[in-house]
Length: 183
Image (cartoon, rainbow, N blue to C red; front, side):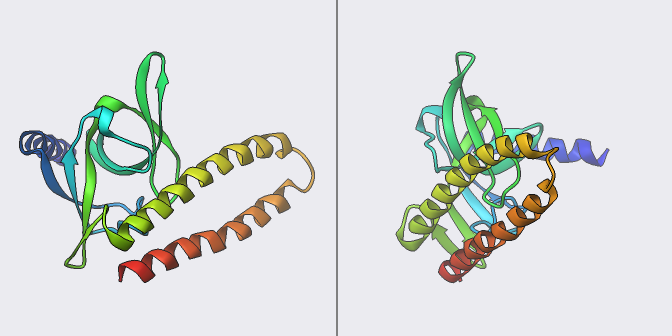
């Protein structure tokens, strides 16, 4: 019953967004940290699928849930335009139909401050996070292939531990840069 009510609310939000062409949304997950934290609000504006570019932070509907993630790549698959999207905090990538994109995030309200994504140091930080995300995704694709080949080899466990240790400074640097520029 509660899930059904949540789905109705999300449908109403999406419908209102479509009518007004823009809207404020509260973030409830940490998938876009450090740029967008839990409880921040985002301002999204409606855009057509052709206006979405790699690096943009988009709002899209996925299984009755509104999601905010970054565009990694746009390409054709089976004759249709699709968007490869991923949260900045890591996790897996996903492919969505370009028609699922509702809008593009243009501003973030963080602790009462309005940060426009296309201005000043926030623009720099947003660009940095896009480049990092894009290359981190590509690196992980290559690492997955290597892991598949080495999985049953002796010493694989130690390589996995080494990889986890080496990835920690990158995550720390990510958070440090964002917090320095945003607070």
